[in-house]
Image 1 (cartoon, rainbow, N blue to C red):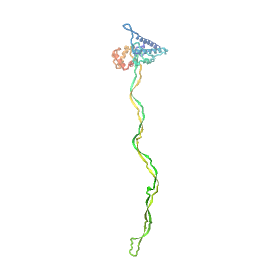
Image 2: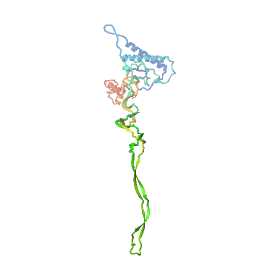
Image 3: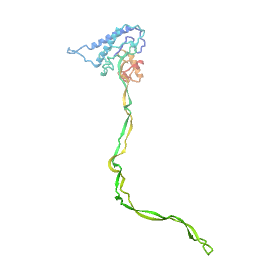
Image 4: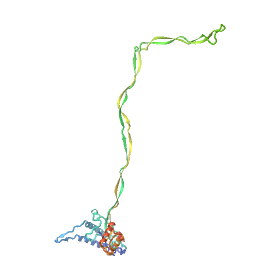
Length: 362
């Protein structure tokens, strides 16, 4: 635990701070540095056992980290003292306070710095001390990182487009094809093949048509010698006669003969499905999973603590009153740091994560 004790009024709530210059403050811090350096040296002094032989006490991890922090603060203080003195100021500016060396107690450790994961944090630049009042003590506390779990939709693969090809389909069958095309040819036909002669019949006119008067009868008949005969003009048709005579057939000669095409069958593949190409839209592949999001990173900060410097009966009584006002049971308000007060204070620090700022404000 790193403490800064100002040799002024030790009351926790005293608002009065004497006006001093930066030079006096540097001298005061130099005295504190000398006191801080002497404690680790005495802590490393060998202790003698009953037998008279020297025995060295083992150092804990917290003491090693404390020594590293003390060395870093000493180097920063030396660099600060090597600078020229600034102009005098009328009020104490907390931002001008240098980092504070570790306390003289060899067994004390820095709060939050003893863990293995924070082994190199003491070598980094420490945060500046907050504004303080006389008698207040602060501890360097490691504040762990703050996380939150949230449901995140993560895209595994983006949306895309693919081509789906459906192949052609065939079926086995047979087909007819022209084995030989149709053509014409000329043939020689002999006369004997036609039979030589043939009987030809024809009509011959013997008497053409004519008009003749023929005796007739009618409503007026001849009764006596007083009346005459009846004659009518009649057309007689022509008279024909059939005459048959042998006629020689056509003599030998050439003729054109058409030879038809010749067809045949053969096996063949018949197309039953021409196939196709389709564009298929592939949607994006999404995955829902929980992710841990960093809200605030790990950091170190100074927090107000109770220490032997400010644990006066008056301060303990005020702390007991503040604990009772916060709903804790510190026991009777007697200004004594008893078991019930320590238990209530420890529970309050667990609830407030080690901070005593609200109690200090009260």
